[in-house]
Image (cartoon, rainbow, N blue to C red):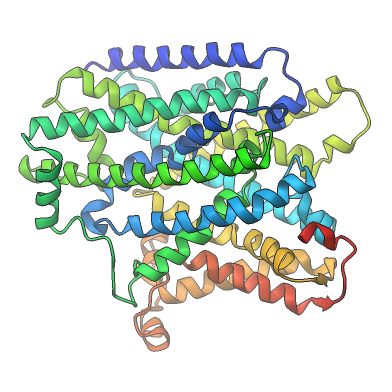
Length: 508
């Protein structure tokens, strides 16, 4: 397929986003940027959040992972569903009672300034690295199939894409992203369904026939009953639940959109409807993965997992239309996770670190500060994308989940300790606990799964014998975030004392 033609469609898509941004960003202010003036439509928020939750990593890595991991990822998705119910009925009412712009304001009300700064800092770190990893994965696909063939360097591609994201987010913020996410989720889901239908038609299969063939090849196994495996179903269910709580309910990017809705009931309807649709969409991605592997087996295609979908969709066997749909769907999957990340990181840094909403000064000076922060983080994104290119890692979803489990653990510990106990903590030691607990979880994970780190670090750790002796083959999976949160919770218990807190009304 002509790379020039694909480039034209990519450019046209960007122009459409800029038009939407111009329409929605007019007469915007800081409140529009941070929380959309608390006037967002809950149905638009719910639909747009699907794209934010999935991202280009899901679009490429989840189907690619079916070959080795079967449908085991669906165990994590079922765990997400449990977590979203906790968000809807525990966290959302808390945020609305406090009327917060940043959810980490709760930590200051409960534990003091250090807890507030620590929570925001861990969110910023996690979002920076996670969103950049997603950005790198999609840019690398676009680079291989479009920009390399046009003689455009990877660095220039990354720079231009980030500049374009800035152009449609710097003014309207959340107010704009609610609409662009809706547009992009539509593009992604349309591409997902169309790609499935086209590949099934080429293989002369219907849905049930394809599912039957997948079952014969062992792809459709959902529940893993091997307790030592890192994909054991209870590990995935628990891990998925706490990943959802941490990466959605304790994440400023995701909750920034939820609390932009006018009422608690609408926000709850948003999160619950979004969660059930997300289960269906993730199943379709796994089904697509099975179809791709059936196709690859039939036509003897052997490529790395993350390259499977783009290789087939953009191959010579299909007409040009599926290649165009794939590219549009891929960039539609990319931008909800990146534009929202830059916006939410900007919001968190301005409100939680700089205390911009409490500073004296007029709206114009505060807007200048916010714009400087916004552009600075875009530059950091660009640098980190180049770092990922140097590492050149594949199946990047594994890295994202691992890194999120380490960085969101302190947030899980902070919020759970605040909500579940009436104890007060010595704020001087908050940072120490938030740093030591993830390090302990990381060391435990390395001890259980040294081969994973040996592969990523390209070095021999020499821990395999120790791992077998201490853990008898037990592998930590997605439950790492729960272990990390428990370490953090225990650390706070150690530096706490039993007393009535002055702000106990925020717990009820």
